[in-house]
Length: 262
Image (tube, rainbow, N blue to C red; front, side):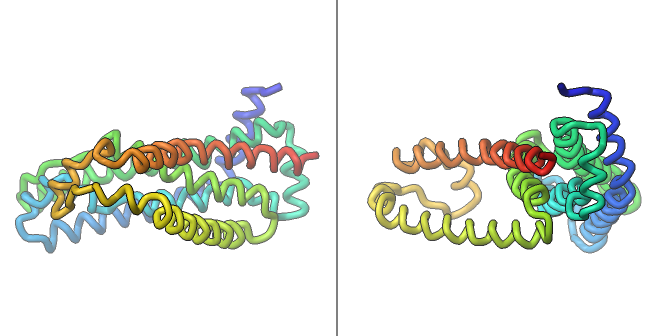
């Protein structure tokens, strides 16, 4: 039976073990954001006009790659004890059961990590903008990440994180290398499969598609409803798979952890 108390104790143990290392990563992330803002304020002409454009804000210290990378690293860290024979035995002998161990590792490596880095990114951005406007005598508008952008970043991060989360439990030795190799091979197979599917099934459908993309305005006007029916169906299917995939790998991680305890 799931115990909140054992879950909290397990989570606190994870936090005490890993928070210092991950705090250093968070500090480096913060300094990187500050450096990017400094470069923009220092060297870009007409900075006030530049910062008032949302597309430029999205390019300033864009956190997407860093947050995905950090999520991968932390998902590997939360099960690092399993890669040591002695550490693995100690980890399995803790009072928390499989569900509580899994929940503590999941909350730490998904929700806590993403929320922490997203908050730090936005708060540091606000502070940098206020200081930049003050010291350079500008009136640049402070742009924020939209909820839509945060959701897309969270969804994409969880897809990659869940794969390495599973690899961290499933592979005892070199989980990052083995997971990356399998992921690369899978992407190649998907790429070849997509090319074959396009050539044999979708090529004819696109002949009647006349929308042209000559600039950002054309992309803004574009809608999925403008696609041929076959492509709309494919888009819907891929979208569903995109959101289901993390749960598949998290479920596999739970079963792999349970199997190790047996």
